Image 1 (cartoon, rainbow, N blue to C red):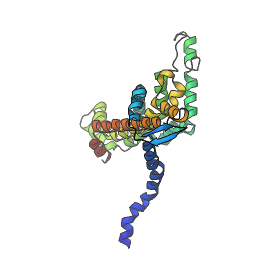
Image 2 (cartoon, rainbow, N blue to C red; image 1 turned 90 degrees about the vertical axis):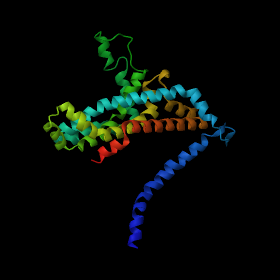
Image 3 (cartoon, helix red, strand yellow; image 1 turned 30 degrees about the horizontal axis):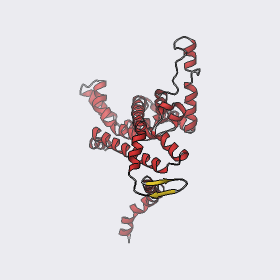
Length: 287
């Protein structure tokens, strides 16, 4: 009996989480997949016709939005890495006994609604706001200069809103680095840059790997920042899916676009993992 309990214990522990994923993830995913192959309208109803053309039509009409979303996602993810790594490095190696305080300050904006934070970012970037207003009054910028309704504003908002998703995994990886290994590199006549490049950076790759996945996926599928900070020329695929579903009631098109985006993100993640070297990352994480 004890042996049976020992065998069943891991499965019983994972059962609640498995049921949760099945009910709220797997079942809706299957339902959405079936909707993506239907034809019809809201008045006459939708019928399963295995209409794979929905995917081709979605890419044909909204392919530029998909490309723009992937491009904005890459830019925002790269900006998050550039900003997050130095911050995480400083907290991990220079934060001292105030590390928790710095991390709390980093997470403090998350106590405010995502939408409110984006609207606040819009107020900061307005033409006569606290940033551009003084610069224009001092003659440092022309009166016609603006940031809102541009790709730069959207990418900036995405970077701001998702930066902690990059900082925290990198910080955890850097926190695990054994300082004695770095001291050994110095003893072997490595300079600060060489010690960082050959010791710290490889050991922190698991954090970078996790941070990129946690950032790139939600950034690419986001629609709030493009709606608030962008203009008609900055529409992302998330905005299209929202409009097709809630406004146009084109459920099949919206579902097909959702699965297309999901497939592209999975392909991008697998390609990224292969390029970075998943085996090397996992080996570094296990040290």
